[in-house]
Length: 339
Image (cartoon, rainbow, N blue to C red; front, side, top):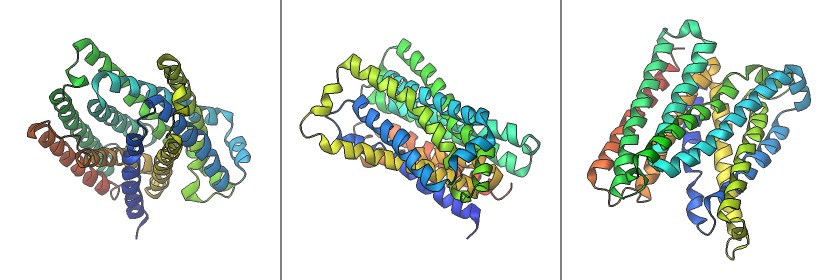
C-alpha cells in the first residue's frame, strides 16, 4: 500500500474523529457550554500535547534551539490566532446557529488553509495538473459547504431557531464566521510553514510520522490561552462555575476527556497523514480533512434526529451539499497522485 493511500485512509479516520468529538457534550447537560469547554481545553490543549510530544520527540529542547525562537514563536502565534478564532466560533454560533456557522467557518478555513500554502510554497505549480486539481477540489469544497449552509439556514428557520432572528444579529454572525474561518486556517499554517521544525525533529531522532508533534505543542499551548480566558469570562458572566459541584456530574470530567482524546487524536492523525502525502500534504490534506468533517457531522446530524420536523427540503439540500463534498474528496484524492 502506497504512502498516499495510507495518508488518505488516516485522513478519513481523522475526519470522523474530529466531527464526532463534540458528541459527549450531549451528556453534559447539567454543565453550561463553558464548563465543558474549559475542561476540554485543559485536556486537549494543555495535558495531551505535552504528554504525547515528550513521548515521541527526543531532545525536544535541542529541536527548538536548532530552529531558533523566531520560528517557534511564529508557530505559537498561529496557535494563539486559532484560539481567538475559537472564541469567534462561539459568538458566530450564538448569532446565526451552529449549522450555518459550522459550514461557513469550515468552508473559509478549508480554502484559506489550502490556497495560502499552495501559493507560498509551490507558486510554480499552481497551474500544474496537481495545482489545478487542488483548485478544483477547494472550489467544490466551498460550493458544498455553501449548499450545506443554505440547508442549515432552512433547517433553523423551520425550527424557529437562531437563523430566523433579526438581521443585525445575522450580519454580526456572518462577520464572526469570517474571522473564525480565517483563524481556523492558522492550525494548518503552523504545519505547512513549520517545516524546519519537522526536519529538526527528525534530525534529532524523531520518527517522521511523529515529527509534526513538535509543531503541535507550541501551537496548542498558545491556542489554549484565548479559550481559557473566554471560558472563565463566561463562567463569571453567567455564574456557572458552581455547576462543577453539581451532583451527578463527576462523569462529565470523563466525557470532556473523551472529547479531548477524539479531537487531539484527530489532529495527530492529520499530521501523520499530511506527512504521508509528501510536500503537498498540508495543501491537499487540509481541504480533505475539512470535507470529511462536514460529511461526518452531517451523518451524525441525521442519525441523532437534528433534521426531524424541518420538512423534506432542508434535508434534501443538505444531502446535495454532502454529495458535492464527496465529489471534492475524490477530486482531491486524485490530485494527490498528480503532484
